[in-house]
Length: 499
Image (cartoon, rainbow, N blue to C red):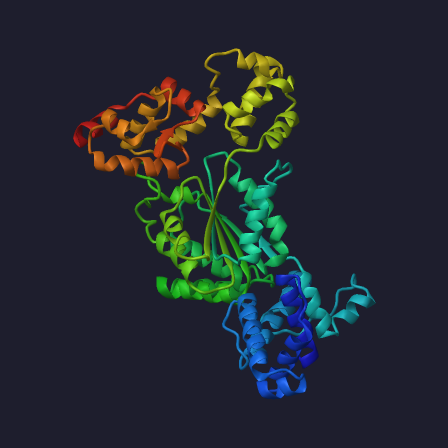
């Protein structure tokens, strides 16, 4: 790269991040640093004070550090930009020629152009500066095999804007997308990927539904990121990498992953985080064998790098709650039900009639997209799409599909949480902690833990009244507990032990 290519490349990077081009003084500082000039020389040539030029330079290095994911200063910015440029070069070539399997990071010379590329494209490959521009605008290398396809998306405009800001502007390292089961977290994350994909070099989506060992997940991530931009599937390099990774201890494996997160701007989406947590325990307690995920998530938020992990969970990981208050690199978004207009569009799409009755239906199902879809299917099957006929039932019908979904949620609760939910289901008004202690006198010190756990599972709601916090549960969940739940012999046994 020569100095003009450096200025052009740096300008593209800064504009992509901030929406502003480099000004004349910033360009002069980069040009002077490239030619090993002192700040005093740059200041004299541009008729500015040396102190002012140093201040502008400091802000510029700080900005480039954030963009490149490593500490950048006047002495090393040349090598840092060249590394970024080389990656962009390989990324662009890999997308076009990867299937021929002729390019590797050690060989940056492009193979002969395929016949289908015209003379204009051929000319672009002879110009490195144009290559860098093409690489910047190229789509990220993606592995979305575990991500769902979404053909219809309702609402969530505000939530998408918030998430995009966290990933692109604030460059958070760890973002948790949280909410109750069926609320639309995974769908929103998939839409987010489409919205921000041009801001990342690599994107990978993985589900933790089977609770894989942490080392297995890290190995998969390293294998993908190591090949970012170049299709080497089935190559000897992949086999050698797998063998080398198996020989690493857990600390070295994590170090290898972090190095790639620093080298590339990666988006890693991990779905079904709640499956790492144990059943019958308070929310966020890892099951046996998965405890080291806590350190992984904590380290991802604390260690310096330029990538982002998005965690999707129906239970809030404790690391998120603790880190969010301590660092701006970790954030969470708690997803509520759909807005009435978006929920109405969903019901309209499912062919329901009698729109005057839609708002009570939306309120009862708390705007939960999954619950509304289940209800719409039942209304179509039993009542020909007429919502009013369903609303005549008191209480409303709970179809088997919805019972099964709630069964899975309730099955994860501890015995104390089930006891709290049973008490709240019997109450017609929100209940204060002091009153709950009267109903559940056993081990009163554990009652706050139970409430906090249920809040982190999004199964109870809280509200303030006269400086007191009151707790309640959603009407549909209340109906489920009153009609479907009865303590098992195991629950009764555990309660007697705790008394």
